[in-house]
Length: 139
Image (tube, rainbow, N blue to C red; front, side):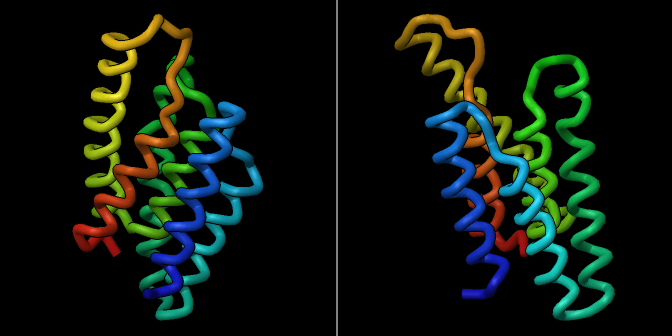
């Protein structure tokens, strides 16, 4: 297992716990995930560092408009940026598609089975989408 895969697994498990228990993804976690992604990529080459930085930027820009419009908290945006540093631009785009599908199914299931809530935790969809992208060769 590569260090980036270990970071992705730890980042996801901790983000899931924080989001489900407290409805928050801690700043320290997403910052550490982004830094670890950049360091893992830089360890291989300067080119890898550029790919990781581009992935973090793409991950940030994917969800930033939703945060500006009030549809998402900043924890999800920062979590997507951290996974972008680990997966690169192509991998994070794939992860975003999977996260959108998983998140949509989760919200639909919540609406069908339970009472309406003001919000739904989206970090779980981001983590699962990133893990599916990772299993598909996103690194």
